[in-house]
Picture 1: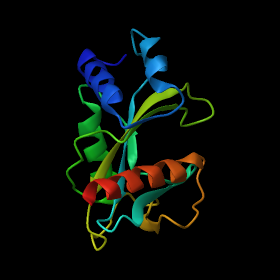
Picture 2: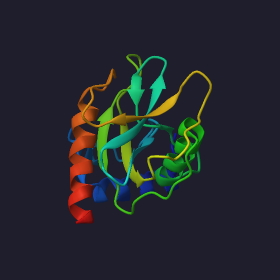
Picture 3: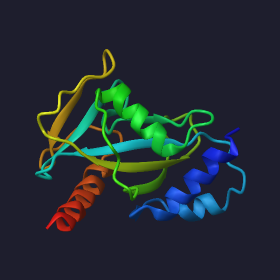
Picture 4: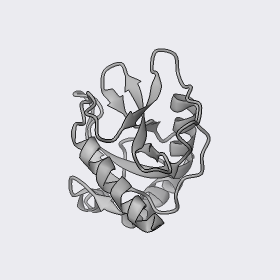
Length: 167
């Protein structure tokens, strides 16, 4: 079971998220006690707003760096940890969460709350990560293979919003 600190932080960030998918806020309201894990990921873009960092997951294809929020951890901290672990990038997350969604990360998993955060880092930032799961910059105009094909349009919409804010 998820601890209350994690639940409270997830609820706050879900409420603040710029975008909502799969009716995530209603899904969360219908679950007064969360027992499923919470997921957190980072949509890392370059200052020119043309590229995103993705990690090649062995079963999911190209996905943003992310994973499960651990016991006693808040989603924002988990997202930063996962970014460092999976892409080798240490970055400050933008203050407003990018998105909240509900998704199943494997066919045999129950749907879970997923929070997406944003970060902007230079395109020449070296990428590292976990063995067998390379990270690389992807041009936002290119297609990438993923079990979550809707992510590309979601990330592109978020990046357009970021670019408008930078003007």
